[in-house]
Image (cartoon, rainbow, N blue to C red; front, side, top):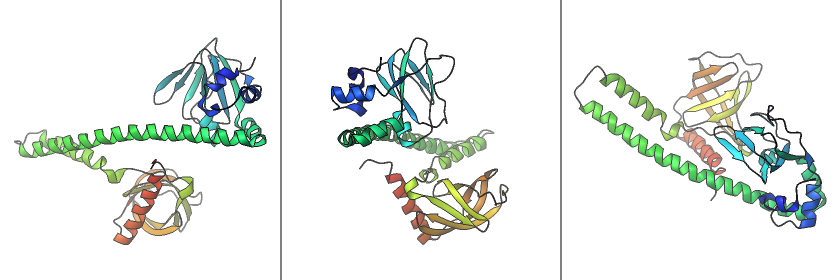
Length: 287
């Protein structure tokens, strides 16, 4: 017996679907043989399928632990967008779980375009709500970070104003490092697909993994010779179609992956980098 129309109706992606339509979708789900000793999926696995839990419990483990109870849709955003799994899932004994591939649901909606539009609107609503919740959490974290920075600076001044002891220098230096590390200029941005970034060297083109106003992390091309920490490099960064010369010292190196600590840029090039970072960050913001 497939998931019922009433169970699917409680899932936001299927909001507004009629009983007959939900019945057609439910018929495409297939049951899964539950094995509590084997993960349903693990972090980093490719996501091609999503699941409906109709009985029992599924435990998701990542940075946090979540216990899902029915009716619950699991893994739909990853499957529909070809992302890798960001959590591990374990199905408890006695649970009832159904699966459908992203291709199956896409083929069905392609043949029922009115439902496809409704599903797309529901999907956008789900994603928008997730981004909104993430923004609230980030705002709380940012507020806490600002308060922490102020207290760290106050403690640093207190150390400087107090009589010197053997602890004064190490405490002051540690506070200074924490303050510098937490500065906004050190926030990293991962280039989105719509704003791809690369760095061109004499040995080839490196893909940028993340960058900030002071550092850029990249994957060197296979033909490039891995540098050593402290080596000086220079190249041309292509920031979504705009080229900027960059240079700096290798801050961290792990095989073909390295982080470059950027030299100071002239105002024109620093402005281009700042503009790119702003555009990339705006993709994560609901206006």
